[in-house]
Length: 252
Image 1 (cartoon, rainbow, N blue to C red):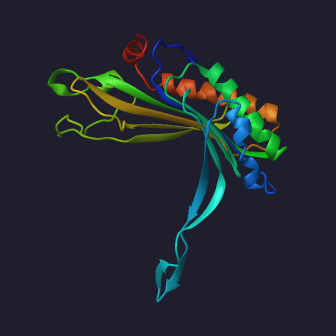
Image 2 (spheres, helix red, strand yellow):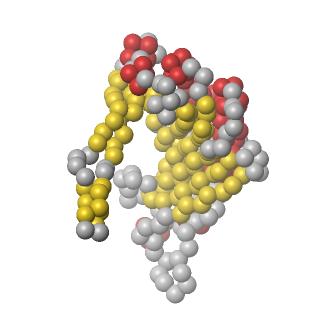
């Protein structure tokens, strides 16, 4: 199976690298690297909170035990000009690119640059989960009658039961696939995209999340090398999910 192909107009809406760690002695306030991240183009900083509802049992029923509790989990840094977002949290690091994706090499290098700031604070963390996720929006042209024949564009398109009209108003498909080499899970989700439709097109989301959560003792270098392997699996999942007609559509 081919695991890489360049397209003139890749349909990537958001690209994500997620690195979860265990760093129990980390002080969350030390992650507020406003000046350092401003020097890297991230001009906006916002807190990230975890939220927790507590319940108690009264007369055999669960009832709320007070107000919603919030705890500071980390900070989000936005580069609004370039569309990059970095999250520094107690439990990990997430880096994403929203829109105008210019290729893996540039995305990875920007992620490594932001990771260096996080890494300087957390020290030598234990890696607990590594993931690469790409959310694609396929803009599919409508045919006669104002509908899209998804069989022409998706390898695993939704099927209407025999005896019912072949007119879909909604669908959702999700498969979790174990990939023994390199040892990961690929989650492929297909559904109508939350994007405005036009009279000529229908947007479909193809969301591919590839991760590994049982890592052992990975070094920092090994973690980034494994992310490269996850990206290769993501590419295979993408190319294996779309037809040649879709490839021609996004290569125009």
